[in-house]
Length: 287
Image 1 (cartoon, rainbow, N blue to C red):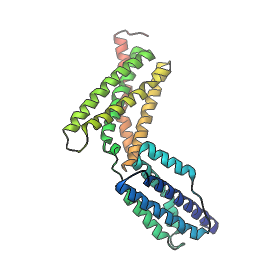
Image 2 (cartoon, one colour):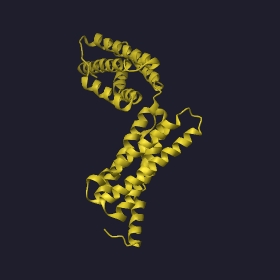
Image 3 (cartoon, one colour):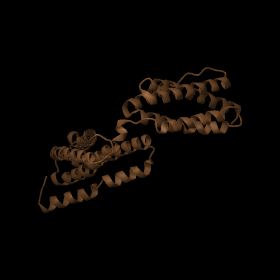
Image 4 (cartoon, rainbow, N blue to C red):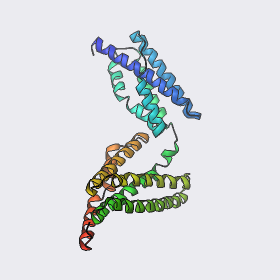
């Protein structure tokens, strides 16, 4: 890097550090116990890093307000674990630049060590309830996708009427959600996992019903059954993508393989579509 580029990199690093200082400081005020202490310590370290870069650039740099607001929003919606781990994963490019400056600027090695320590602190940072019940949410999502997407595909060819498909799909979905919630309650009750059977059943049932409404929504607002089914399949893939992305970040799991597995397992649409056509033909059901 030439001197001009080096200065630009240092200014970006300085802005990044003061931005993260503000984010961690605000987050530390919203939690209690050991998590608060960890976040406060990281916030203080980020401020020290800002002061280090300020000593190199000899200028004041303000934070990225949009980035602060974005991560605070993410934490509010998706939880603290997901938010802070997403932020740490986004620092990969900055750390690569830091490594390039090792040997050129005295003190960068210490910054890299402290950033690595932050990652280690964040690995086991939060014991969020929603993460303890991920398996229950996966069960609700997967079963809803497997059962209802396939059922809607069959209903589409057999019934040929959007409102009828939506009605039958809703009845099927809600009944299945109650059944799955009851099964998860009994399953969790027989375990020694320390999880609440009521909460496990709740997470399974709510996730299932939310997925049901997402899948039948096209049949309530569109008129062509085949377009409805296409949008339903797109919605199903989008739901798998978003949920898998959330889990991969929050629990440090590989994204691509899990996403492909869930899509392949969840979408038995082609077989159900063919079955619906066969039933419609054999029984002489016409639109």
